[in-house]
Length: 293
Image (cartoon, rainbow, N blue to C red):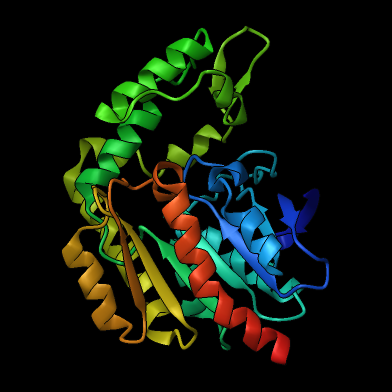
């Protein structure tokens, strides 16, 4: 693995970890809201071992990537970064996009004149988002604006949010939390990403309007997709219902569908073994086709 710099819209610097041979066909891993390039577990590295040049990217305002001067964290903004990333590659990439990363990929395809992707894996995201689950995520992300006094407290809070799925290792949280000069631990993302989303918590009508805009942008992209597609849903997801998954499959009849049991919206974190296996199986024929030229 090596750490590299990629470029998003208007040259925005995006940090990425690169796996696999430098001359392998490209693959992009695009995480969800509030996550980082380290959210994929073994999936990105195993794709590199398969022969891909796999880039696990910190999206704008997340991890070690730049924060735009003006707050710009709509899904359409992420879509512009996806367009820039694809334009810089020599050939269309396989894209694995979780939640915001998947939504941004659909937004990108919706405004592109050509097919952007060799293949697309949508990880627990469809045009029909359950806003109750979305509000729950935003409520948790907004709950501690001043951070946590120590990693153990942060782990307890995350464990409570996850319900019966246990709390994470405090030491492991250093991947997503950073300690400030005041000694408190804060999420390693720009707090402005919540500005357009905190309205969901107090105004259901505005939340519905936001969901309608998401649905329109993602549906436009889904309608234009010709590349192979796979939807990976968390079996216990509170963001993508079974009905929403079936609606996407009607929208993209050639799409494959994998439902990962005992996984929530955070599929790669909850069941990394099953998630990585599904991605590798989907990617293998695409790799053969890429090598065949």
